[in-house]
Amino acid sequence: MRRRAKRDLTIEQQLARGPIDLPFLALVLLLTIIGLVMLLSASYASAYYDLEGETGGNPYYYFMRQLAFAVIGLVAMFIITKIDYQWLRLLSVPAIVVSILLLVLVLTPLGRSGGGAQRWLNLGIRFQPLELAKISVIMFFAARLSKRNDQLKGPPKKWNRRTPVGRIGAFLDRIGFLELVPYGAILLVVLFLLYKQPHMSGMILVLISAAAVLFASGIRLYWFLGAGSLAGGALWFLITQTKYMTARIDAWLNPLSDLKGDGWQLWQSQIAIGSGGLLGVGLGNSRQKYMFLPEEHNDFIFAIVCEELGLVGACLIIALFALLIIRGYWLALHARDRFGTLLIVGLTTLTAAQVLLNIGVVTGALPTTGISLPFFSYGGTALVVQLASMGVILGVSRQIVAPKAE
Image (cartoon, rainbow, N blue to C red; front, top):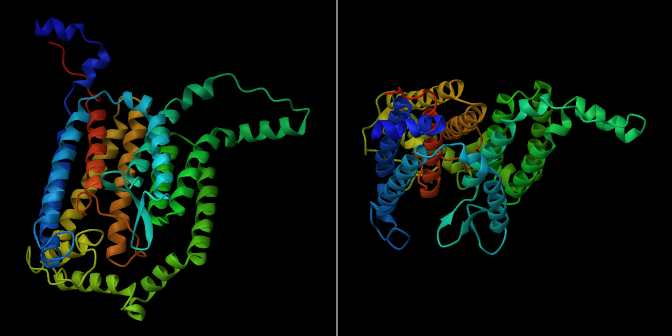
């Protein structure tokens, strides 16, 4: 009966039941476990001394919450791997619409502030709509661009070249500008809403992941050069004209000039990294986590990793991230269709950008931003979304090789 049932399945259904990529799964699970261990170590002291605050003096508060979200995320990841990723085509438009609506709600009284920015939304649970927006932009771009070759093969649009409007339209169509209009419109809306929060690091992540999908789809290179120059100019303008960003740049260039303000965090992070030496002070033995380093269990958890595990341990964790990213791109190259390829490219690039930017910030190579370290930093909704996105990649990996016929 089982053999007959399997023969009755369509090719798509059989492919969706193929084996997931075990190396990628093993790397995800390993990073999640190490991240939970390091979060317990990094958050123990601050949770213990927060007697009148959120934790009530419970040293395991942050760890237990993160563990619960990790379980939810792993269950979600497993369920998503069982779903044919082609359904994400249909969900791409509703997802981007919902993401934009949630970003708008952040700017209403439902939004919540923290650290000088209004980035959170309270709808029974507190979360950042940015986490959903990053994934929905990738889904929307991948769904539309996966059909790009078929659209380009269609009959060219006829323009009345006798009129100025017709000549301009024909020129813009020839250089590919009109093709990019819907993507540019979506990006502008999302970036504007992030700017109003303000969330500069979120803007950078959305731009990088969107650019990766566009590049993988075959958009001409000169558009990236032009857009990169424009984005660089806009970034410089925002930094110089926004007090919030200007203060962070000044603290990054000279943290000792403002040790009572923005420079304190970076300076304490560098002390933690330097204290770790080659082999570290030992797991759980960090001194900087005892109320010296702010956000020690969140954005700056990698500094505690360097202090407790040393250069060797930090390099091993970086190597695990590198293997995860390389394996992700390998799966993208071997995906069954263009949609699967673009999905993996976007999600893998997003993970790579977060890792590189977070480590760059913690080590002082980049100005301080609010970018968390995937699988390590405290944040329940962020961890669930990260694991769910890994589930999408594993779901695509199921259809790389068709299962053997019995």
